[in-house]
Length: 75
Image (tube, rainbow, N blue to C red; front, side, top):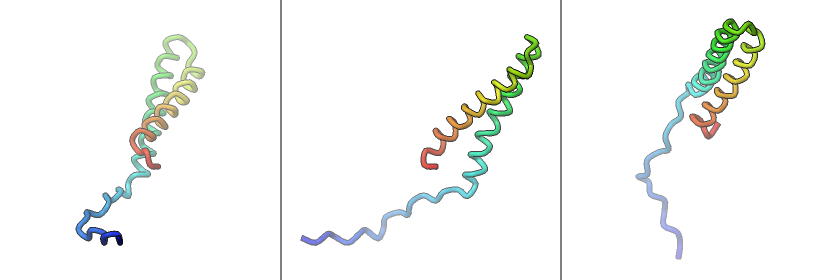
């Protein structure tokens, strides 16, 4: 028995926003800046500014990548 023809009234697949790259970049850069700021603040309190800023940047980058993966699973 032949397959029935495809339904011509199916809705088209959802369009992707052209701004997805900008949003993904923002989701990476924002936690990096926040991590650096928190690291700077904590580092100024304890006297280890540079190491905590570096640690905050890496932690923020990891958090930003996790945000992008959860928000855009298909990138």
